[in-house]
Each structure stands twice: as structure tokens, then as C-alpha cells.
Amino acid sequence: MKKLDIKSLIFGVIIGTLGVTTVFAAGGIKSATYSNSKVYFYGNEILLENPLVTIVKDGSSDGQLYMPMRELLEYMQFKVEWNSEDGSVNLTMNGGNNYKTIEVPSDISKNEADTKALDIMQKTGNWGYIEPYLQYMSTDGIEKVVQLYNSKHINPSEHKKASDYIKD
Image (tube, rainbow, N blue to C red):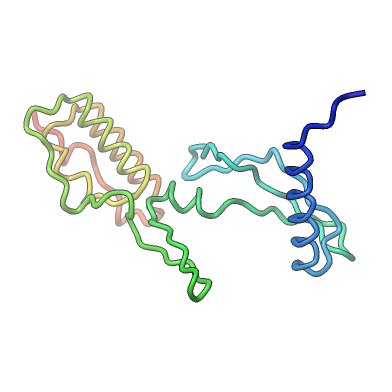
């Protein structure tokens, strides 16, 4: 028989209390289980620190998938702030970076410029945010960022052509 660890006991009581509180607050949850489902944003998997949860409500056999919104929103470059005074969540676009005022160092390598521009395009889909990098980017990098931009914009009238930005 294993020796009872006080930390394990306290942890168990806390988890049990939270579980009971959650079930009571939700008003009729039949089950809640961690899900191995994956989340993709524009074709790229988001590696979440906290798992997705499938919840089945009383009277239903179909589960609903819940995800940690803070992680998703922060991945999408939102600043997420909890206001404890009124119990609200405040979101601000591009909370992690202000791409509008970014200054690109003149000694940036083509590889570094390509990487930064692709990262910005992946996270924002905003062409204006990568324009300062264009003059430093490789032909291959420009083609990739144009392809990524076009994949994020369904309307063909918004599509870009790499040849318009490649300097011979």
C-alpha cells in the first residue's frame, strides 16, 4: 500500500471541489473529457498548452468541443485582459506586436527578413505589415509570402502577384 502524500490529498480535494463546482455551475453536464483533437489556423497546427475538452450535456449524446480561448486569441496576436471588477474579458488586436510601427534594421539578412515576414503574414494576414521587409527579402521569400497572403484572402481581386514585388 502506498503512503498517502499530503500534497496529493490537497491537490485531489482542490480538483474535486473544482469539478463539483463546474458541474453545478454548468447545470447538467453528463461528462467532460480531454480531447486529442487538433486545432489548425490557416492550415498550421496550433500547439496548445492546455487541452481541448469535450463536454456532453445531460439529455444529449453529442459532445461539444471547448478550447482554451486565451491561447487561441494570443496566438492570433490579441492581447487578452481579464477585468475582475465587472467579470469581462477585454481583447485588443495585435496585442503582442505593433506591426504598423515596426522598423526593419538595414543590415537584416534575406533569410531573417523572409522568416519575419512569413511569421507576420501567418499571424495577421495583413500585407501592410510586411511591406517594410520586402526590399530585404529573397525572391523565394516574396513568393512564399504572396502565396500565404493569397491563401488567406478568398476574393481574387485582393490577390497579389509576386512579380510585382521582386526586383530584378
